[in-house]
Length: 441
Image (tube, helix red, strand yellow):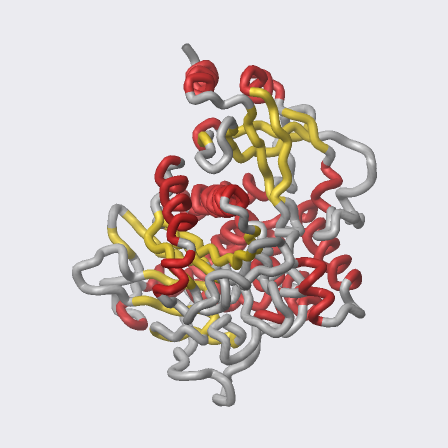
């Protein structure tokens, strides 16, 4: 019995009738084609058809055009990755698998974000013998209906009262995560009203992106079954706090954590510092990938621990890049956190671009500037990251590092979507912008 037949037998015995095959587009929307379990073998062998035009869809489901992608012509094949095939505990009768996208000829599709991330993983391993562990923190807000997020669990920030109020819901989430093989490190109320966060165990970059998708859809499904609506948007209310999706990372070689035990800042090895320096240099451009919605810039405000400044520091939660030394007896505890990213991001694009920036830092043996201590606001030499989507897009368009890594097809589609969304909401006020995007991600 081959791998596909084994998967089908497992799904059938679990009562799975349909499989959701997902990819994430450049607007940050998880799109899906579903197949009956009996059709899985054909889906693996031949792929499932889908138009490439979705790479230039906007958050409101309108479409734009790009130099290489757009219009009604063409077809792609969605091929599920059976290594990530998961029975969905929150959606009885369903399973899930992410897809890689190919041309109809089965040639690699140059604008496939998941393949882009995989290429960067291979590059850093082949050139430097380095593996990365990555993990996302997913934040969301819940309400009894889609338009009242934050109107439940509105006790004190991080308060036990919130956990008590929704303890059955949170228990169901933990059960679903466990049943699906996800390993939460933490699940807790967050600062904003009705807001929660789950942090997953670090894993390889591609798997981390896959699990970010799976975790979100698990939260969405379990919320719905408990009469709740979950929003992962950067902003849920125009005058409130937003949802981040911070990215943690550490570098490893032959079982050694390169974020500790060196002579660099706070014990970093030279490789760790060079990688983080590359990421730090590209942060203004990376913002167009990690904070990609016009609404993202309502969240990126000084004083809200969102990472609004182009700064880094030791355990500094106001800096965009926070370095964590970890305890001496925790070999995996030393890591870096990128705080300026949110849930509108395509996680495959983001991990791939962060890797590409870090690889450039390694190649050039970059070093970090001096760290910031305390609130960067008002300090000399502390500059804001781009304060609007168009400003971030300009930085992305000017980045030779990211242009080379992404390639013309993928970069052209990303820039087209960003510019079209910026124009779409150019004259929109904050409240209207939040309403338009709140339930899209």
